[in-house]
Image (cartoon, rainbow, N blue to C red; front, side, top):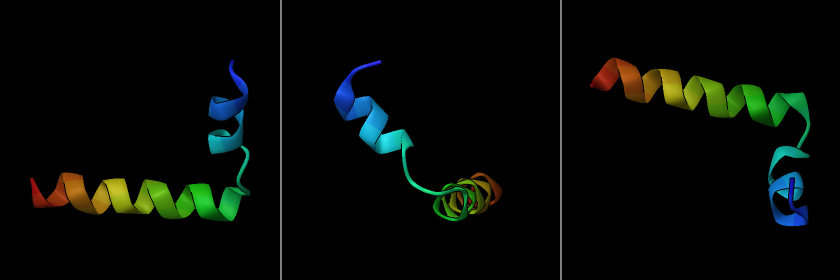
Amino acid sequence: MTEKTASVFKPCKERLSTIYDWHAEVAGDL
């Protein structure tokens, strides 16, 4: 894993859960 990738996946779980929620909304719109 590169440093750039690590920095992307480093955010806290709260932010990750927000991203998951966003993907869920997008999938629902599709």
